[in-house]
Every structure is written in structure tokens, then in C-alpha cells.
Amino acid sequence: SSIDEWTGNNLLERKLTSLLGIKEVKVVAGDSDANKAIKGQLANEAAKQFLERIGDGRLVAVTGGTSVASIPQYIQPFERGERLHFIAARGGIGNDIGLQANIIAATFAQACGGTYSTFYYPESLSEEAHEIFKREPAAIDMMKQYERTDCVIHGIGDALRMADMRGTAEDVKSMLQKNEAKGEAFGFYFNEVGDIVHRITTVGIQTEQLEKVPLLLAVAGGKKKAEAILSYMASAPRQTLLVTDEGAALAMLEKL
Ligand code: F6P
Image (cartoon, rainbow, N blue to C red):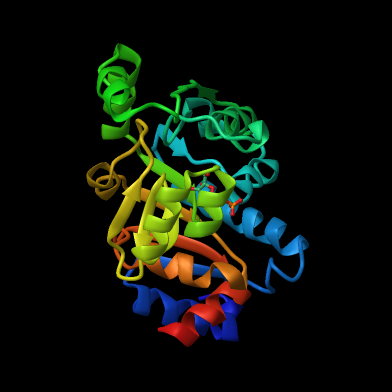
């Protein structure tokens, strides 16, 4: 039992863990919306949790976004890191190349001394083209890898903000609004009770596959993300570990 067991944050962590019904919540001090440096604390804590818990895991899938992208700088090469293989949790190409899952997977591999492979998949496909593309050997191979993924490290974003950033078509955006989409993760958009109201046309890890991943690390902070995090957590797999900040944690508690 460490000293921080007696600090306020630990109480906050325990309260949130039980209210969200997930494995554990880690809360770093501060609010990353108000203070940019807190994002580094969040990433540092996520790196620490990852290293402590990866154990004999081998295959790690990561998503894009600034929160996950900030983690590798807090990782030093370690012995078992050599056996780690990193992949993107879904195919796709974002606007900011440095924040793409594929690039982040490579950065993680470099930090850990491990390996990575890339998987690109156009997000602009029609349903018809997607039906054909997803039968390509590379896509089928990715789906097989998701079946045996040991760890997923992912971000959570505000649904409408993510839709905007992705240049989503107006009709889809109004559909998201009508269906009251709140949070987004893995290309899935969730409403308040955690139902998926929309998904990006892509090849990526599926919710059934997530259920089977032993180590799920969600990394998201900032007061403005509270609703988004809650909507994802409403149906998140129970083994999820959330690394967040006080800004988001206190705002979530107010809404629970
Ligand atoms: O686009 C990848 C992604 O992980 C989204 O699923 C998520 O909503 C977003 O990035 C989070 O980004 P950030 O950490 O920059 O807020």
C-alpha cells in the first residue's frame, strides 16, 4: 500500500472505477484542456501502466490521435520490448501524418526496441468497393491479427469534433447529431448509453475482438472530453484501464 492510497486522487480513481464498471482508472493531476503540460503527464502515466502490465504480451495495436502519439517518448527500450510487435488498430489515413496509427505503431516499436508492420486502407471507399477491398489478403491478415492482439492502446474523442476533423460528409454529420453521438473510438461513434450509432468504412479491430483483448488501455483527458469518455465507457469491455486527468475525471463524476 503506497502513500497515494490516502490521497484524494486515489479516492477519485476508486469512485470512477466502480461507477464506470471497468478494471481501473488512473487519474493524473490537472486538466489537459487548461494546461498543455498535463498531456505529457497523461502520456507518462499511460507509458508506465503499459510497461507494468504488458507482461508476456506480444502483439500491440494502437490508434491514432495526440494522446496515444505522446506515449512513446516516455518509453525506454527494455528487454522484453524486443518481442513486441506493433500494428495499427485500424487501417486508414488521417490528415496529420504524425498522428496516424501506422506512424504511431512505428514510433512505439522504435521506443520499445520492437518491430511493427503497417496497414493502409482507404477511408473514402464506397460500401461496394469496401466489400471487395476487405477481402484482399492484406485486410484478411489484419483481421486475423486482431483476433490474437494482446494489448490495445487507444484514444477517445468527442464525436462531432472527430467527425469535423475527418471532413465527414454533411449528411453523416447531421445523422450523428440526430442520433446524439457523443464519443468516438476505433472509428466507432457512440451515443450516451454506449450504442454504436455510426462506424467508419474501414478494416479495423471489431468490438467482439476488443472483448477478447487482455490489456485495453484507454488514454483520454481534458474536461471537454468528459461526455465522450462516458459514452465510450458505457459499453467498454470490463478489462479496460482508463488513464485520464482530474479535469475529465471530476467532470465525469458530476454527470454520473
Ligand atoms: O483518430 C484516431 C483517434 O484515436 C480517434 O479514435 C479518437 O477519437 C482520437 O484519435 C483522439 O485523439 P486525441 O487524443 O488527439 O484527442
